[in-house]
Image (cartoon, rainbow, N blue to C red; front, side, top):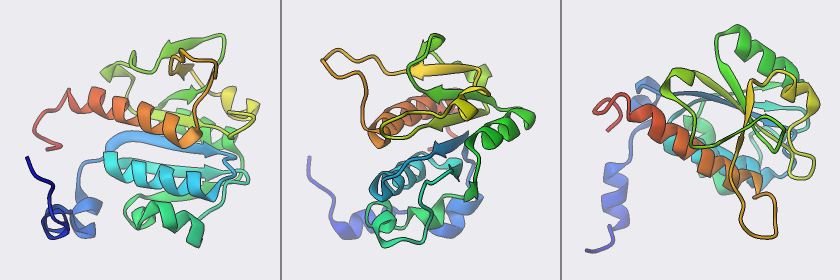
Length: 184
């Protein structure tokens, strides 16, 4: 085994033209009042990694272009479609009206393990919330269920960008297992 060189990695990278026409993971993430520019950048970069359908930034979540977002996004704001909607509840309701099953990544009284989503649940709207207060009640009101990442230590939550990465890559695995070959 050997590490790939930067040249080899660059040769494998997809062009923006190919990315914009490639089949996307049928998940839209609603970023609900996330305050950290670096978390937003990380969410974009992770979204690029799974070829996410779209990001919806809401509330006081900062929007591109911002140098702090780009520092962690590394150009993913150009490869991931995104939009801004002020009210996270409105964004979640709009997705439900479009036929998305909506989940939040939150601790509630109606939780599923993050790995228990079924292919029949797609397309999915996934709401991720503020670093301190979590998903807003206005968005939570329009969610079908919450997804939980089990915690075994003394902390009950993860950083929002880290939790999103865990959940979205599992959703990607679940979806892509239904259509092998299309996404390789």
